[in-house]
Length: 341
Figure 1 (spheres, rainbow, N blue to C red):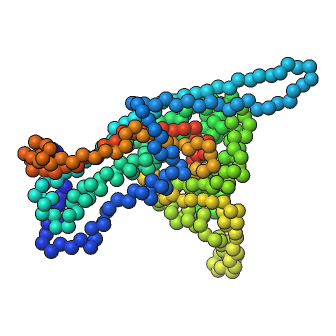
Figure 2 (spheres, rainbow, N blue to C red):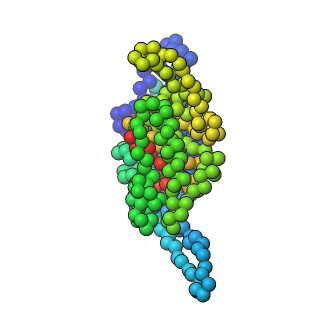
């Protein structure tokens, strides 16, 4: 065993109280539920890797001219591969320490490590959208089926060379994060961009009314939580009118928040794992989710002690180990947009 056993010294003190033993306990159920609109979870897998395939847009109708033969037009298809990776987490404790732990907290907290596997989708999702390097997670950031990053401007799938037929693809140049009004303006520019997306036949991809009715998820760095709350949740915004010298407020004019008056449902997600000023819009009404988890083996659990491990018997240890196998990949991101600041 390595030397990093659980430190239970503070838990052995006579008279120690457990009123605050919930400190640092992980909560994962709400986190998993929150990811569902943006990430397809638990796609079944039966091998070391899976090959997925999809078709490009079918031909659209065009006018038939008298005297001409019937016209036929084909359409392309594509495939991509997602590999399953092994994930693990383990803890161990001296058996005497476990026996003398007055709160019974060390054992329960060690078993809390199981939630680390449940947190993986959120951590990997954050890694993918921010294209971050993390040696503990994915060794490389997966590309979308068109061979480009999740957020990109170009793609060979479209005859004009632009992803979704637009020169800036699913990347929107933002106006910064200087005010709630700027963020709100960029959000509606993003909604408009979804409406401008074209299929591979260069005709409209989305029904914008359907996207608006389904609503949107907005993910942003947690450092901007007040800014985004002001932009999307406030009942009103106020424009303060000052005198010419700018030394005295002479009026305050309220303006409607378009999110509320327009009836668009927006869920905010403050993400502590991403940084900077870029943020992301996800359309719930899109036909596919941009990121998915591929499940080969659900989390399994093993406990080792003196009864089933000679090493643990000799070293007087109790250990717990969780493992699972899953992969993560990107679909075509028709419902994902990065606001690039």
